[in-house]
Image (cartoon, rainbow, N blue to C red; front, side, top):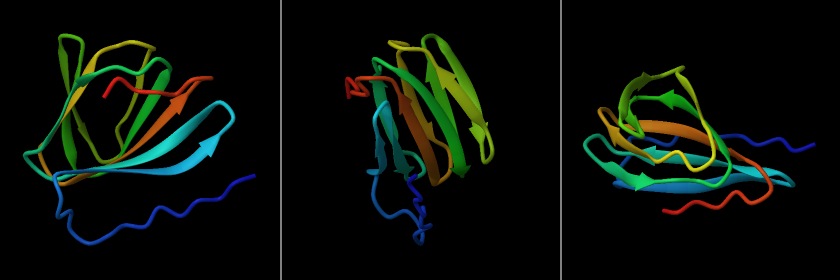
Length: 106
């Protein structure tokens, strides 16, 4: 068993911050914080990915589609789906990479 507390810091003061919060046999969990107006460029992961918006709002591009996600939104990506993110507001995302090799092309 692993228990992790995700602490909400004050306002996001950097462009994009990634913090691995949990590592397990078949994946990892990452807290991704993105300042409003910043972007994460198009990339892919070689595993399933689940993205949960803990706070804020983002435009999440998957292949050729754009999805407006806000606090409480959840998204599943299949392996190798190309995606990018643009923060509309300061945003905190929980990203769960699930699979035996949770690397990312970013």
